[in-house]
Image 1 (cartoon, rainbow, N blue to C red):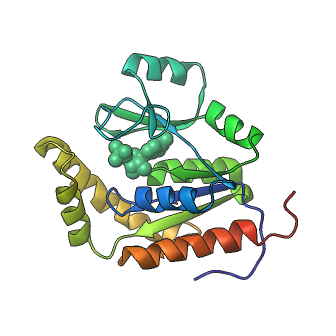
Image 2 (spheres, rainbow, N blue to C red):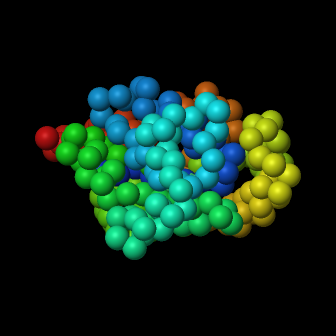
Length: 200
Ligand code: 5GP
């Protein structure tokens, strides 16, 4: 799966259809490599879920605030991922993490991943987390029980489109058995971030 070349990646983007497990993978990597990696906390206008923490999972904000930040050019990339729900990566977040000397890890959708790759090019590695099947994804989304019926349907439609992006990025990480996916993800960080001999 992994190439042998050494490369200094400063940005590692995990992208996938909703429910493919990228958030679990990203959280795991942050626990395993806390000194190296820093999470790019996105801004969003969607409602905070019960277990989510402001400033850690997201910067939750009103649509009005979000739109004024768009006007001010504060976003590296932003998207209306679901109708009425905006998500975006703030320049200030990237600057904060770079100043802290972190390799930045992102959990964003496929369009956001394309935008970050376009902007940061060779500095950026994009990993597509591949679910074992469409059925599994739908089951995971059902089990999560975070969506209303309407929002569930929107997410299902979106998943179908996002699955088509599998071959658009640098690496594909299969998430069938979670423990294997987590260990493969650790290998990616070790090989693509830690093994470089010219990091300062
Ligand atoms: P959720 O509502 O489940 O937290 O996230 C919905 C989708 O939006 C996920 O695919 C998530 O990765 C994506 N997302 C989160 N933050 C951003 C962001 O800053 N930019 C973009 N483009 N997508 C994001």
